[in-house]
Image 1: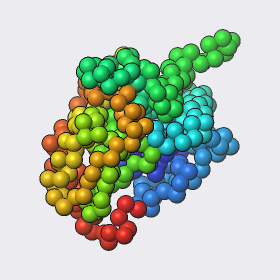
Image 2 (image 1 turned 90 degrees about the horizontal axis):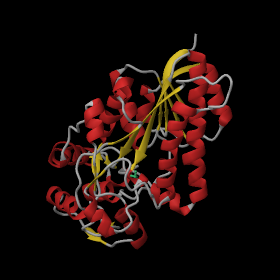
Image 3 (image 1 turned 45 degrees about the vertical axis):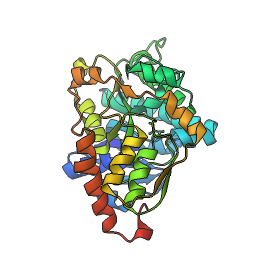
Image 4 (image 1 turned 180 degrees about the vertical axis):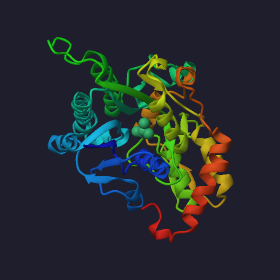
Length: 347
Ligand code: SER
């Protein structure tokens, strides 16, 4: 008998950390974790197995099919928006071909198990592309099907992978004589910028939020790369994990869409600065906008409409802006850095 497991790619990333810790503590799942980087040792006790490897390595994925019954895949691995612009073709390989490999793995798994494999996919506000700052300011809460004209490679990759999810769920090999239906149960969230008290993201464009906060808590100076008036939707990590698990567990018949916006609060960079400064009055933060990164932020919505998620699977964030900073981020970040010598912080 093969062991029933869940597979988490990008295990050492921001969401991977939060998800593995949460699932590991609940003790309900056998976790197989993959990442190209070594995994944070604190996560190892929660994993049935950690594999350091590449999602582009089909032999590695093939071995997983042979060894495990994978009931759910959380495909979190990707190259974020800023980093992707430095090597768009490499990002496309990881973000698109990597996703294709995992979808193919889900199909294989499903044929062995005779049931659909759940495939949880984090998409992003980067899938949107508002044509000008004026349009952004007028747009209000953007719905899933509006402004799907991303300007970044990462955004294009995310939007296309949403389409791949629909293709694999409903139309895969549609001309085949032996076409099998219901192989992949694709469920996708479009996340806003995420902020965690434990990790900081690498290579994203919404990173100024978490970076400002973590730098201030460590007494390090920080130059914010967007204008004070830049506004994006954000969410804290516990709510991101909550949304992934709520969507995973939602009855299929309730899901009217494959792709759902989720969000919590929409501060400007200035508003984040004010909260950080209040908690850490010594913080040395200045604004030095990087024009190209600012332009990306100007194409992402200031707010998204997550009413479909609220209606179909009961989505509601636990943390509004006030609670996010006062009850979660500030106290846990303060505790985190006060325990460690400054030189080891952020590692
Ligand atoms: N946080 C991501 C980024 O900035 C967007 O999903 O790239």
